[in-house]
Image (cartoon, rainbow, N blue to C red; front, side, top):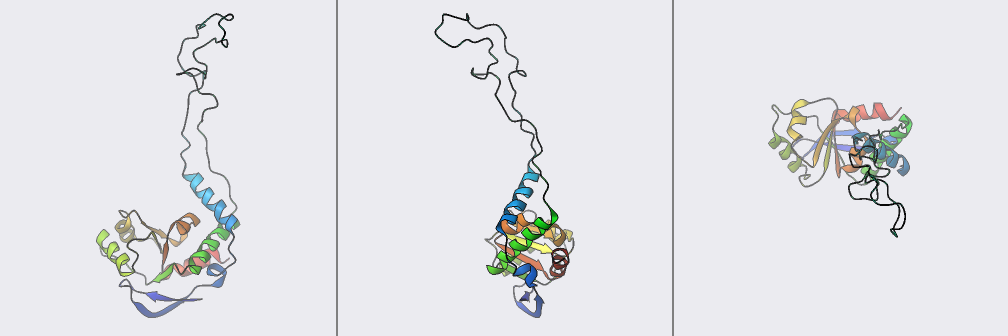
Length: 209
């Protein structure tokens, strides 16, 4: 599969790049995408939630009423979960939500996600570019030239570029990552994926093993 390379003005250049079928036209595996997205989101959770149980709250332990003869259930403490202000039964406790996922599954998930984007014609290859200084306006103009102003966009660079990253940081619907940081969630979450020309080979070297 070949893709035309655009410049930052949104116009076609004379160059073309090969998008290997093993990555962009593979047999997608939906379950691997589900597992990798779940793995990514689970790792983002802080897991610091906590509710006090009956042994942890400060309330009187005086017996509320006599044991028999009231017509109601017996009660021995205001700490019981059945009373307002009592401790919570089986409340949340701090925990780690992350779990292990095999590298081959994560690799398959990224290939599947990129294949879906390729089928949707949602992958654009862009000439390598740089900004002289970090300016959000430069990045906004770039998206306008590509007609992606109103869409969720993922820009994948071949290597770290501080000016491009800082220029995009204030934009809620745009994200810039390097090819080595590319993950399934970002691909699936974006409406359009913009690959810098140098990132194509990096992605191929990482995923086509």
